[in-house]
Length: 591
Image (cartoon, rainbow, N blue to C red; front, top):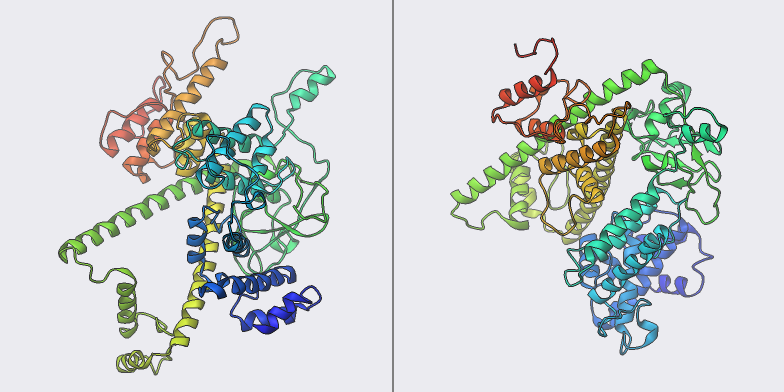
């Protein structure tokens, strides 16, 4: 500890990375990252030790992620590890502890936040500070300063920033201005909607229609959307496991596969380690400085910067032309994958429901007692599984027996003699690190699945009648954007959200399609009397209706603007088929 204090006080910048890693290892801290990150981590440990010693409390740098988040939440500070790194959150906590350690902390102007509330002298912390931030959001929304709204989180945001950076800033501000948190502020919903609108407008690509360019030259306007490849590059994409560049001749992919990958339509397999990855889980490099940057499919049609302080040159992503036959095959593949994801999600929900039912039944059989619950119950179950040979390693110290040592008597004897507290602590630390890595991988896979689902919906037409393939998170985001669901109110069900969005789309289509081109008023095709119902078609319906559950079939009906009269699965399918082939000579599939 003394060596670390001396190094921080005198020569931390001149120290080598190996020297800093050695000190971090001796202090039980992580040694991952570049030299600047290692130096900051060592500085945080020394500052935390100086703060905790007088109060005889644990060093904040030694807190686990869950404990760190609790301490931050107690002080009303951001605590989301998916937005900021652990070191950044630890810096927030240590700065807060420094302010608390000062005499009359918060009374002087130097320690007071820069944004002070102006309503009745409320304190410049907690809800008062959040109300001030919400008022500032409304003021900036009136003048249309979308970038300034997202920059209220502290990090500067511009139109050239990546969507990932915009989303981080959006989430940071939304934690303070969400209506569920500002229940005493009447305009909290307006402020949150202004924040959502600013994020949506700022993250939308500035795509120029080909019709606009033709109108400038006096030609007939076209309806296609196009963009040029000026200042666009085929950026390097690497596998997240083996770090090998993807898209080489040995991978056996066409040039246009780069556009498919970067738009989040599908995943590809690394030819070196056979890992499936997409644009959200891959490693991306800046074409100018070769530095890493975060990418999202919404960035594909934008000019962005990598976010490095040394590299401010914007760049875009090359758009390759896909052959019509390959595009048709891709559409069919993407639709089949979307339906397969629906079945997987439904199966997972059913398993979760059955597990919860079994847990409730077991609790009722035990008379509602607390036996087997909590951490002690989980530990007892893990030890019982280890003794029976159902676990490969000891749940206490992590010892993995060989084939000859995996006898029941040997395992029982090991548990009786396994009392080394240091080995137990080391095993818990390794397990926590492994759990953190697994959580990060799971979060990456979840983001990739969300991106693929939205990209598939857009590729297949992006119609309201196809919203049955969107996820719950995407439906909620679209409802908030369209204003059919307000934040802070009771959440709508999935079917209600789809039905509301279908009605809103029908109203928009009816406003645009007032005439049929000959001067006479004509309602949109498939709609009668202004209702939101539209005729199902082969492109808007799943290929295999019988593979869906009854609730998923109701979602399909809601996307087409009607409520099924039938209650059974086969009857709902028959109703969909009748609506699809109404007025045609084709034979129903059920006949």
